[in-house]
Amino acid sequence: MIDLATVARPIIGAPMAGGPSTPTLVEAVGAAGGFGMLAAGYLTPAALADAMAATRGPFGVNLFCPPDTEPDLASAQAYRESLAQLAQQYAVELPPVAVAAAADDDHWAEKVDLLCERPPAAVSFTFGLPDAETVERLHARDCTLLATVASVADARAAAALGVDAMCVQGPEAGGHRATRRIADEPEDVPLLELIAAVRAAVSVPVIAAGGLMDTAAVEAVLKAGAVAAQVGTALLLADEAGTSATHRAALTDPQFTETAVTRAFTGRPARGLRNDFVERYDTGAPAAYPAVHQLTRPIRAAAAAARNPAHVHLWAGTGWHHARPAPAADIITRLTPA
Image 1 (cartoon, rainbow, N blue to C red):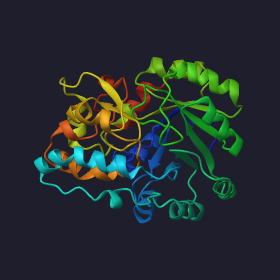
Image 2: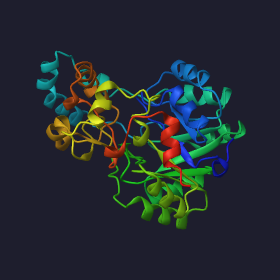
Image 3: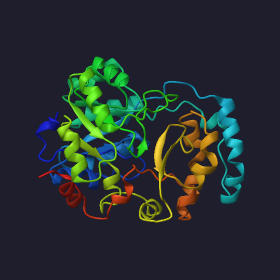
């Protein structure tokens, strides 16, 4: 268990699934006085166990909660057909919709069992909320439990479950929005306003996330009552991050001038740099996670291998242009108010 209010620097390294959140990055954030989170999303239980074993010092683990609905197969099929020409361009085969839409809970039960056997200091949840039994089991293993929320309604639901704190994610955040249900459209309440609203609604400690790229932004959320600031985009160019070469290059490429929230890559709303893929496919993307994620995966992988940022998800918050390459310790120090 960890009391985030007592961490030397009130900075949490966000869990960034898909590669950026390496054990080395998580460890470096902790060594700098912050608190790092491993991203369990998309990992097999064995890979998560290896990552945990490779991480020294106190750290947390973030879990994806299982999908709340079955995908609309007709919508997924229409989206697959719209991707056919691009798949042909990259000479890749898209999975059949039945395969892409097959039940996929990201090894939820196995990962919960693993964390009960080898409890980290904290466990956070996104894409929904855990069941009461999971909360009870992890609390029994002395884990601090954090729910990621993006609305007051979801904050109230999380508090009712008995979580120890909640990460309040504003619309400025990069990557997936923390909407509880797949079909939910994310709210646009600015982070500082959302912090105030959540603090008025629940009594548990609040962590702030979304667009926190400099000391002033971190200081502002702490003054608003957050016990810590969670940063992700600010760490994407850290030396220790596992951010892909294509993603790294795009973050400093002047051709990218704005971000957009889109379902085009995964079926869940997520903020990234606006590129050709977003322009072409955003309006036709259904609310069908993880089906859309599986359908676009071959294209994204081929584009990344070709170093073509036009057809890769380039997750980034609204302040991405402030990200700079540096050791993680330097980034954490720079973000910490005096």
